[in-house]
Image (cartoon, rainbow, N blue to C red):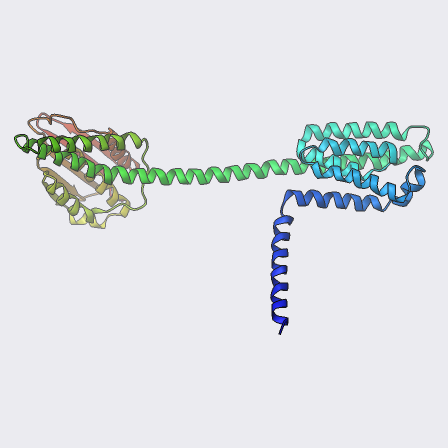
Length: 382
């Protein structure tokens, strides 16, 4: 009866232990603890020899001294020189070379090439001086042989591995920053695309709102609602101004209506007070989506400009696809009287329209005469 609850408790304990071990094993602190334990395990193999070589240390005292030295590896990332100086002390007192390998690696890994080379030279000089002392237990010939064959290679190899790891960390950090930069660039491009949407759609709606509110304001000048409509027109203009100040750069959007959206565009312009006569060559429907998008953008921008500067005038739109060239012509008359307040304009719509046409290998010209304004765009069909 009590087996199942006990089993569940055991599984929960195992799960908690597994999560703890996974989180702990990947941490820098766990690596430092593991390094200190490994160093102590290697030095513990020589405990009998240390106790015999130095009468002041018996087995337990030698173990405590070595453990204290290994504890300095816990701060090897923040203060690698502590482990290094302790390792030099061990060389001079106990002739122990294990800790210095970890210390030289740590200096090279966390302080770089210059510090690693300096630490290696200091270690070699100090070890040479210690091993040349008259009290060294081995003959001088054997001491020099050990120094050249063991001491120098140990230090150089440990420091070189640490420096290589340091350079690897730098490369990995650079790759991480590049990846972050790519993400930020993608986010910025997406924001630019959103800004384009805002300009093309919300900006157009605000233009139409401004125009219609000004018309209503003019029609209601002799009524009690004149002030209200005037305030509405001012609000619309301010909103459009804020929108144009926010949008500094605009990018390409992924989804853009094609020529099928021109009829709705013309109908919307007609409802706003600027009727459109649309002459569309049926062959235009066979163009690529990219060129259809260019056609839509050119016509949309022209209708928006006409609504700003020539409201009430008929707009003639002609799109022909005969021969190797696609021809887009938009013409509208100019109003006899300018509005009391000029519509707000960012001044970037025509430049964007021209850039889109040029990107497809075409040309765009805008011509203003005394009584008309005409935009002519040509681009290759293929």
